[in-house]
Image (cartoon, rainbow, N blue to C red):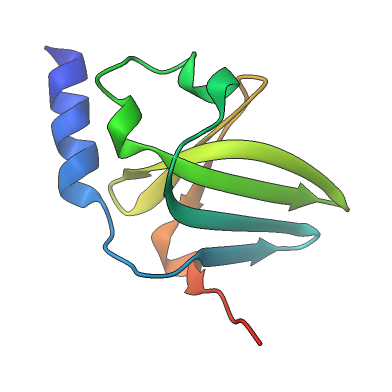
Length: 100
């Protein structure tokens, strides 16, 4: 039952966007893609029912890049990394990625 409720809340809160989003905090930059999560290590940590709600992400911390997947979590986005680490980014910190 909990999984069903979580899935419903994730899908209902999913932001609609047509381009990548980025968030910056100090020496950290998170890039959120609209592409479905493709990281097998992250997908293996997720309940199969939740997998469709997750999208690809990459996070650069002090010059080192980490793969992750993200899903909506109310007024934030939830990040799940390959190594099982987790994070939250408040939605107000996300901006459209500028491309040249």
